[in-house]
Image (cartoon, rainbow, N blue to C red; front, side, top):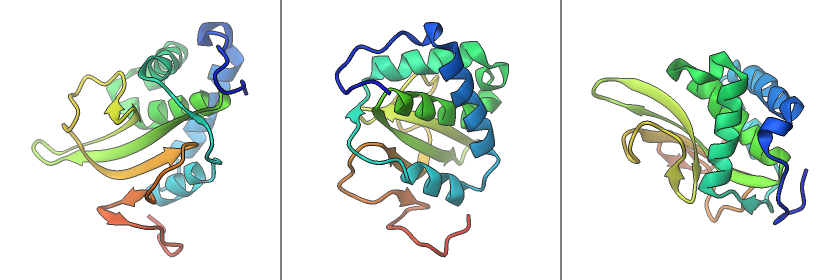
Length: 156
């Protein structure tokens, strides 16, 4: 993990870190949404917020390293790998999962500065169902299915 504010080594030169993030994301992606939220919520706050450029660089490294993450249907594993990769460098991001009703579609993405990064869809195209600040301090608890707060009985 790099010190906050330090310039990290570019991702293409850190293939082992990218591969580890992709492998970890594959394991996380097999979990139910509530458990993914709890796992991501365990990352300690205090990280420097990632810039859109840093998140985009991590996303491009993940897509280059994994065919599964490169396709549209790989959005869950891709977004989780980007989160893990950013946390390896001490950067905080916001992980989101949401839906669109017409036509129905589900999607997962990463935000920096309140906007989706590297996504082919405009901001607001999907309605977030789950948002989890990962490694960044948040004034409010994560949003889950439109309700604020955490519930230890949730098994979604």
